[in-house]
Image (cartoon, rainbow, N blue to C red; front, side, top):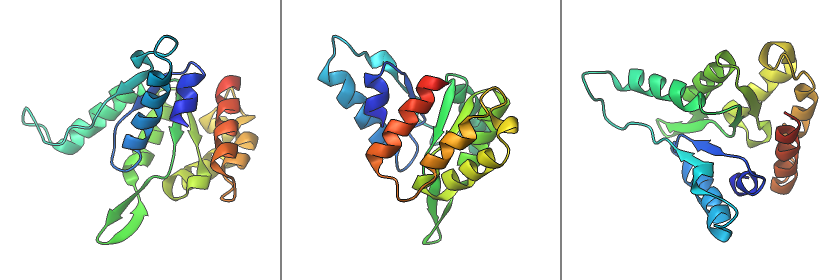
Length: 169
């Protein structure tokens, strides 16, 4: 998906979180390096999360500030998966919901890909239930998210649907 976004001229902003962060970077770089005359490293903005507290600030406070700054670089926010391991169990990641709330507050259009499950599925259901709240100028988005909420949808189908949504936005 990130490779396709770059190839279609979009910029990818990535918090380089655990899990999918590396895949996002690899996909974008594959596209950039496949045609460096056409695509630019400026199309990939990487903002790795701080791993240790600094300047006397709590790490969670730093992460919140970091999320605010990173999301402000975007016009559309894609949400995939949103899970983590806690005590040996796979659970929804609350940080993803915080990022969703920041995106909505900043006027960034949220596009959760519910087919990936976990927090992304919960967020997709939220947007579909009340599109006026989450995308007031783009209420058609709720209908389009139905395609992205189907767990049987394949990667190519999801990729095409996301690109259609982004182009329309």
